[in-house]
Length: 292
Image 1: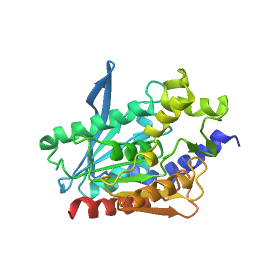
Image 2: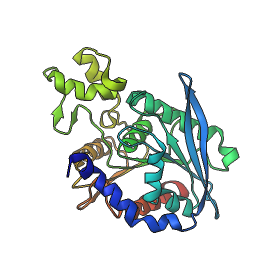
Image 3: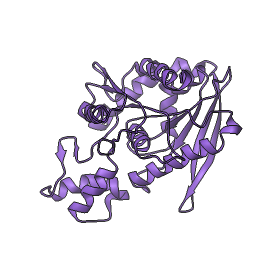
Image 4: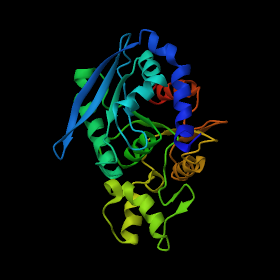
């Protein structure tokens, strides 16, 4: 079995295991491809999942990105994980923001696009009948990275009340055993350059690259005014080391930010029963948003 097949296997199994969820009538109505912004002539899209039942008047912005790609398949992955069933079942209106893909955008660009999405939700709060001052932000993997970065670097227009993320990369200066410093090899630098420049086609000095990597690393952007965080990460993750979440947690706590890390024993990237942790995340959002 090749590496690509091995990495895709959890998603394939999850899809088979949760197939029954697709057969049931969902507790939401889905509106596809709403244009929430534009950059360089390219429209930025989101889907809106509105609860069919009683609305709680609150919103969750879900960053639909995997491996820093933002095709519609990422929304379908979140459907299989029951993100929209669970959140909308609680009364949340969920805005699934697609921030663009690494083939065209840098990670800084994608974070800016997510901020545009949050600002759009706030600007249209009356239309969607949600409270613009109590918005939660979530995402998994690449989406978890972008959600974390946006929560930590937002301005007033894109600020959120709480951030709940799954297995996020948080430090590109020390990622997957590759430490980036002035002594890094060209191959090591090329690996992370793609996060700063689409396709890694541009070059900069090592010191400039390090500064740019810091700016897109959530663990290096923590401050004491950050919103509360919940991080969920598997201890058998083959793609994003658990240490990435542990570092973010440590820095948040050092800054006095309310933060918690739940470690899923045996959890990969993702795991078959991740809908159970989605439920935990939804309950946590209730504590941060509904009851405050």
